[in-house]
Amino acid sequence: MPNENYQIEKQLKIIGLSDNEIAVYIAILELDRGVVSQISRKASLNRTTGYDVLNRLVTKKLISISGKEPKQEYMAESPDQLKLLIAKEFERRQIELNEAQKIIPELKSIHNVMGRPQVRFYEGIEGLKAVYEDTLTSSEPILGYATVDEMHNGLPGYFPKYYKRRAAAGIFIQAIIPKTDIGLERGTHDKEELRETAFVPFEKYEFHPEINIYDNKVMIASWREKLGIIIESAEIADAMKKIYELAWNEAKRLDVEIKQAVNISGK
Image 1 (cartoon, one colour):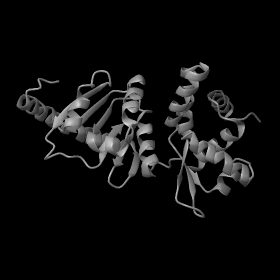
Image 2 (cartoon, helix red, strand yellow):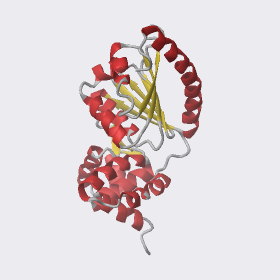
Image 3 (cartoon, rainbow, N blue to C red):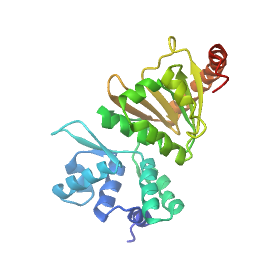
Image 4 (cartoon, rainbow, N blue to C red):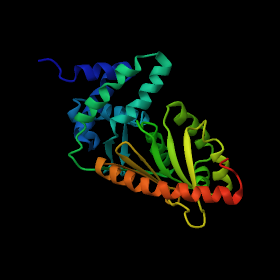
């Protein structure tokens, strides 16, 4: 009997995954989450091999870890994460990018989401980086609320490179930002960083935490709690986009007032 996942496995191999990585990745997509023994059994691997492979997939950001031993679970990330892996392989080996990306919808159909919103928690500095990395998978403009000062203080040195990578990927962002010196300076780079900024009064609208809305996801980055959250739900994301549209219209009005007051003429 032919393997029903043959084409998917073929493309995953082109992207750079090994046979064992492919087996474990497909197994965890079907399970959504599980402990090492569950996933290894489904992938037809022994526990030791399964553990090593799972950690390699964590490094590639295709899966994440929740909890601590002995109750540690591995969770499947959205197959959108493959876009980043594909982009790296395309740059390194000149593989056919468009052809490889065709498997992502098929992998999403394998991913056992059970019709429920998927919520992922990421802790610490690396967790905050992880949620920003996920925004680089967006297929549409990102809608965001952020206090730039907190971003740059929270991840020193990370964002200048992130902005360039986002712009290189052609991902535009609309940003509602409190007026601070750092925020205003960042706004001078809007054109090259594919961003449209609306400034709002800092004393009234200092955002804690940051929120980004894109595709069917809502990303939350809490700088004070060092916690990143991604909610994956078409319904929730749609509601947040509509709320953002209302906020954006008011933010643009306030932006005009601010620019007139400080006489920066939109710069």
